[in-house]
Length: 337
Image (tube, rainbow, N blue to C red; front, side):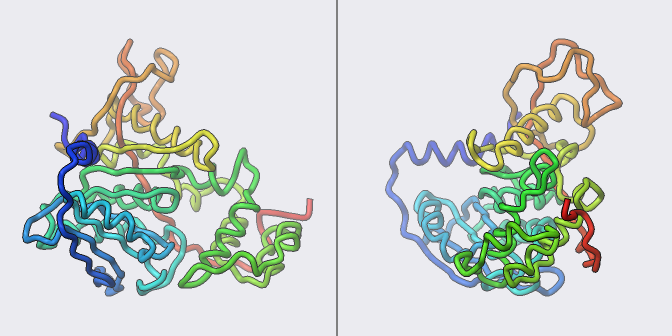
């Protein structure tokens, strides 16, 4: 029995049918009040009728008002599209810290979307990069209404990529990104002296060279080695806990290719060797040649050996959010050498 394999497949079929698009109702700055009292801002695009429809959710730190094209597209094909500003960004209340609350917030947004009068109770999520990883974090909370995910160019282990590559800190990528999101709205990158910032030593203080005080950047630079901070920003080894079909999209020259491939392979493995998961839920799978050596213990389920001759399969991922780290006064992590 294959459950939603998947809403996205149905969506593609509806496109091919070439049906007449319904009228669209648009609601802006709709409040989603979370359990801690924080109000998130959502824009809702839906068919202008009294029916109940499946819901597509996207959560972004990059301004949900720019996502109108996706809203028009999905609503025009019979879906409700809910695009939400991340906590502390644009029209949403709270304080923004990358990924800190995306798990809990996302699970509550999914539950809210399923309960609305225009919803048939089925929710899928979509998005890439930050909008991909925040899907994993939300799915890890096992929201019952979540049916599937469309994940594009997303990390699965933030220490491995994009914070580091082969153990080297990704200064040229992480300093500009944390600068851009260093406020409620995106900050222009053209005002900064990047030659000064990227050549500054010690690396942990590079933000001061461009006139910034970046908590997230300093936390990432301070944790130069893989420790419990990075464990909380990795879904590796937690593949069996999500339990919904996932469509992976990536590219060979994308920054997150490592994450796309690692997520796909990890979830494939978890299907045949489940250690955990939601009762009664399974992911859709297709066979791939086995990547492990015969007889090798499954790294996600070390107490079990894979059946002889079996290929690996699954669509699962588990994510976790970090506890808000304390800022320390030390230079930690990097030195002039």
